Length: 582
Image (cartoon, rainbow, N blue to C red; front, side, top):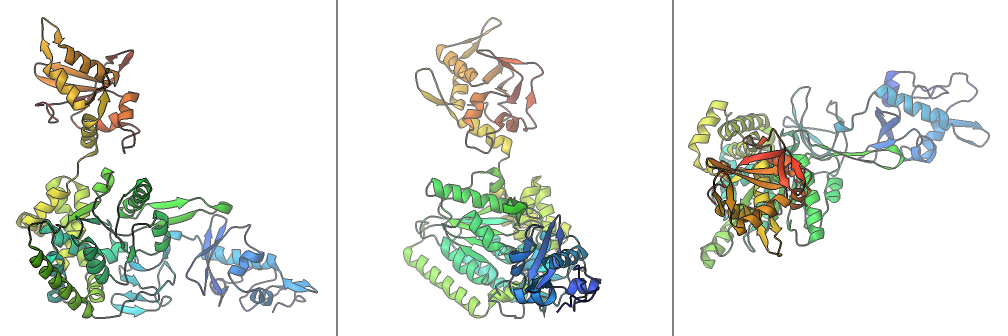
């Protein structure tokens, strides 16, 4: 206890009367056994309680009094920072100063280093670290949470139900791939990609890019069985499962500082509320796919921002796929199951499904789930290297880096179930040409570019003619082309073509018909065109998106659209874009 009669008052932590920490060692020890100072960020101090798996952030205003009782009980503060009054109490000024000085000695606190459950690679020595809630697995050896030296702030969380077992051998791991391929997929490559996702999903925190999958299929096609029974049981203890009513905030808050895969069944957009909820979850998955996971920062009371950085692989399952944004389409691999009407007799289908259940029970009873996880940890550097090789080969063949980023890790995960070998870039190019199934996967997952998708949306949009009749833009263009003939120095239109042309011009759209081709002219700032894109991802500037087409050009001079509209336009060659023969 502090003795107020001394001029220089020392506690067991080496703290003076003013609450100054006298050495670096005491700064590191200050707060034991109740809490530990983590550092300072701006004017806020960060602490880790010894009895709770969390990081407490206190602003300068919150330091002192009741807020500090979150760190240690009152008697601890009274024992180490006794007040000078007859009533005793706590010298809160000295206590606050001691906390702040200890945090300052700790240095800048980086919330990105707060680490919960999941797998990561230690940057200083490239060791593979698996945080299992109450222990660490480092390069195949078990450690306590405080026994491994790391720059990260390791927090204790709920322990994973994962026994420490020897990893699967390659011959055993191939049984996982065989099980996944037995599901009634619409085409064979989907089973391999599903198996690859199961391999890489639990190590999502160590992946430079995190691909997602969406299992789709009609009623009783086995979607929930694939997601919850096959993936769920093989990933038990190292994944989180959610149902259709969960919100984006619920997933984010459940993950907290964990980097675990997310299994989301019944991802149906049944009504407007469900669609909005699902859109928010897809936005979260979109940010999680990126290399470092885009930071999600939300303002809070007292000047404290709440930060999340989600680095999870997502797996969705539903009858209908509610993907609207091209950014989501390029990040999510769609895997389709056939339904009961897929041509297979009911008796044969039931027998095959029973065989699947028996195979799965055999794998789970032999602890294939945790053993597969430890195999992936053992081979993680090889898998990451192979993913890079496959990604580069796919990107080179398709000229799409995004497609390579998404499919490369899945192929590497599947390959690791067959072999422990490293795949060099030249080998990946050769395998890409040999594996016909991979070519099928590439063609099915190639996404439409934004400018092409926006132009297709415009062509399919309906507009209203003078008499209330609605026609698509493509139909009006066809009417203008069909009803226009070349006269003496001037094109002549029949009445139908004239009405179609006038309607298009009112919407900021005009045709340029020449003997050697047909071009579409789009007014860059036409409000009528923007109205046609309302509610889409291109709402803000649809014509600018279409102008990203390498074959598009901006007219050098303003174009007259009629009714006082005269502006520079974006010119699209309809023949080159495949609209010239309609």
